[in-house]
Length: 157
Image (cartoon, rainbow, N blue to C red; front, side, top):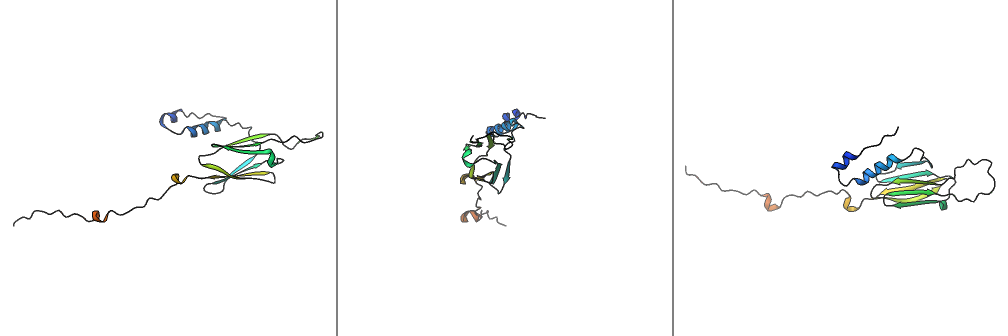
């Protein structure tokens, strides 16, 4: 059963979250049949991720990985070089396009193809200005630290 998420109330009281709403809306449009090639996403560190895709039968020349803004796209196009008549064709060699939404400041660090597994290393790199920083606490100025004496009028007894 598929339910559509109504984000209209959020639009009334939020500013600057358009991209998040677009990601949620796009995620709800993904069809259940979009399951080839199979893949895993693993968080390997605080800011490190690994995507592993099973692309058996594809060579590195038949695969293409592109990152445009916050979208990572992996495509596979099998070269038609097989000769002969297939009696049984059970190895999936169909073309594919798999897309991954990336958060801000996430970049592809490395991609390798080994034993039919395409591994894409992804890393989040926050700019220095956006990283949390510790604020030093200083004491007040030395001359301001001394309490000032207010002289009271002397009263005769």
